[in-house]
Length: 213
Image 1 (cartoon, rainbow, N blue to C red):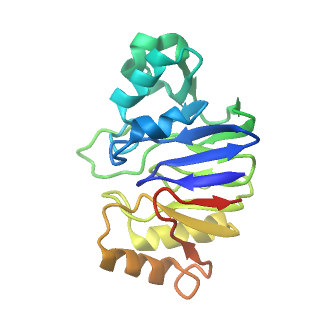
Image 2: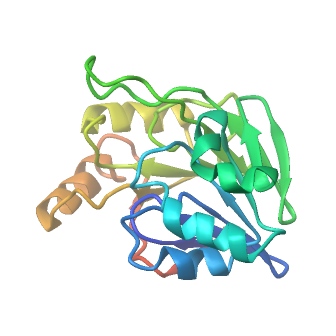
């Protein structure tokens, strides 16, 4: 499969002429363009950096066959296109654009006690690539490639390292990095990379570029 990294937490998957996208959010300058190339949209949770509601609703209006898969808490955001919204929860197995996707976890990482908790799910694609959203939930499955969040108000470098150790993937690809300066990116690469705390290289893919998994 082909994995394309877009800004922040947004990634697209493609194989055999079909594709879907996870978390096209407001940090991407062209979410409509990213969505236009996808047969389906998967969302991990409701935060704006993961969901461009305007772009997704516009795409749903233009394409009646387009489907959005997301936690039930997001149904209201797409209420004008309720027939195109598919609620998901931990334990679900989906068939999306020729891929098998299993759903894991249920809660966003805690930011602060004053912030109400929100639902967050992770997606394991073709039993190989895992996108955790905003949580360090360890799926009860083997993970070949872990998409690792490396910045955010909810995370710490030490927790990220422990998460990689718990998941034990073959490859780690950085996501959710847009809050980091150049110095922060270098620090994450050093501490979370092969010679740091995890023993596995941290692959940084520039926005718009792709990997073959």
